[in-house]
Length: 472
Ligand SMILES: O=C(O)C[C@H](O)C(=O)O
Image (cartoon, rainbow, N blue to C red):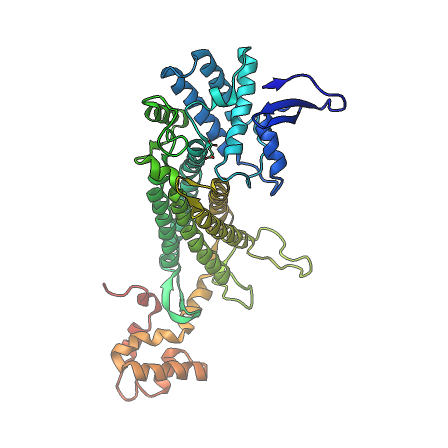
């Protein structure tokens, strides 16, 4: 397809052809006419495909070339040249040859053709005879099965290799604190109002479990993300593939990626929607919702130093204010809160895009892939940063935490069973109104004098630590 002649005044370009005619392409580019058209058609976001997805596309092309050779569709030398070219692209050294905007054709055809053109150029060079982007590199394939498969592969890999280990790392950090603070009593709070006591260990154990459930949610979504449409070609029928192609190409792809990729059980389902991605994003949204709550808890507990709750000291990482000297802020929880905002926003994008299909094809796949890969990266990095730069270094202000627990009027609750709910409510209100402890308020209101409760009963009932361990 390459016309090596250059026109006067266009020496930095070469002329390429496609089925629509001639296109001027930068002289050194490995890509061809269709990529150049897409670059010019979609100057929208300035964001291109993630490197992980480019590598996944190249792995698919390599597996397809080898499968095609084995099934007699491609000459072995051409297939080997394509596979070798794909290996080079997988290293990332040619990422700049993939300049097409994410906001492009909804099937990802432009990016599929970009890969076909780059591999065709590299394979042509190494083979010394023409390798065609469509006839050879794209043989037995369509963008409609290849491009979504590349998203699913990149997402599967990122979930297994990045997100799950990062969430585990954060869960361990919470578990360490849960054990350390097993008896560190503090005020419970519901509706942001004083409630009965808990321990810091109980709260942090809850956070750890929340992260472990997040891992379970991701693991549950994984098999559906790893089920790929490759082999269905244009509409799921597998038109233009040799018999046995889907099974063989996916077997080779599994070896190539070392991921638990499986062939779609129903190629029409797998091609017509991207529910697996919507599902995975839902798991990420739940994790982001949980992390938002946890980061806010940490900020509240670390608020102060003098006018806040101050049960925790959050590690000082950097001066907080350009104007208020000595002020230090909870910068990591704030950063992670923004991560969560983005993940929740990306989930809305992914859900809406997931609905953007008709009949045999979804037509919002590039943005789904990019948003999902971004969410995974942000959550994985955010979880690690939160663990290493905040949770690990948290210190409990044990005396302050206990004093606040003891000052909660809700510690009157165990007295319900001794003096009744209504009398206990009077005690709670009296303690707040008069600035007394609950114990003092009980005595002040004459409950001991009247023999309605003994001092020994009071000591047992008002022990804040024992309130954190109700009999089971
Ligand atoms: O690019 C292709 O292989 C197919 C395209 O997405 C289409 O369905 O029109």
